[in-house]
Amino acid sequence: MQITNNNHLPMPIYRAILNTTYKGQGHASYASVTGLLKGIKQFVLEQRYQEELEEDASDRIWALMGSAIHSVLEKSETDDNLAEIRLQTNIDDKILSGGVDLYENGVIYDFKFTSVWSYLSNARILDWVRQLNMYAYLYRKAGFEVHTLKIIAIYRDWQKSRYMNLKENERYPRQVEEIELPLWDMDETEAYIRERFALIEEAMELPDDMIAPCTPDERWEAEPTYAVIKKGGQRASKVCDSLKAAEAYLNNLKDKDSFIIEHRKGSAKKCLEYCPVASYCHFAQQKLLSEAV
Image (cartoon, rainbow, N blue to C red):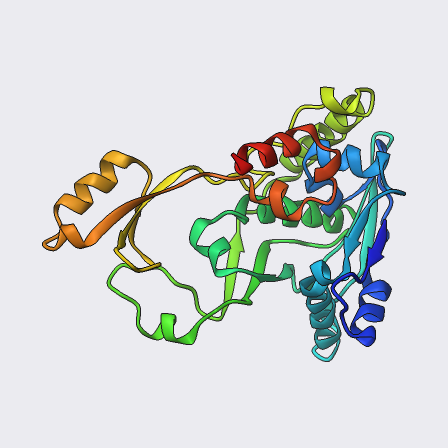
């Protein structure tokens, strides 16, 4: 993959991104934890078109910030913790590798620069659970005790004013949240890993257009919603899952004539904005065409 600088980042930033971009392997019998989390179609297409792929450095700014936090963590190292240790293990004839941000006294920590939207929607929780359980599997296989999994979420678009002026029952995170995740047993984790490798091996034998699309979760698929918005405003008073629910809410407002209902189409956010192989993916191209209509 070529890392371009089409958006003209300052050269020191561009060089730093080039030097911190992980160039991991990936094929039917070898994958990193983060590679195994990708949609099967994305994983396979990335292998097939590796030489042709391009990504702009500006899309890796937050990945660079993630690398920066690792340097900060080095200052907190003690005899009881390990930071950025990369491990690998064999499962049948397959190799899985990965490195956690921090291991300390039986706790695996992973630091995430993420969006407030990911917190409010719980959109990334399942990925995080799978990721940290695979890390736990690697550490347990290497002889380490693991009893707790934690995400340290740092919200890059956090707004102090929103947090300080929460309405009743409104959810909004603190600027930095510690999120504990469920810990799977070894058999459950190994079954998941075996299943992912088997799906990759099967997909590798198929032509591009015959590989099943990534799952809705892997595409970060959002369902259509109906937002009740004050005329001339932008922020929704309420977002509902159905038109019927939105109409019921609107009809109960005292000044209901001042509001409208806006239909918000669901979209595959990762396909349309973040997937590096979207231009090679038949499903993503169909989504782009449908969004343009």
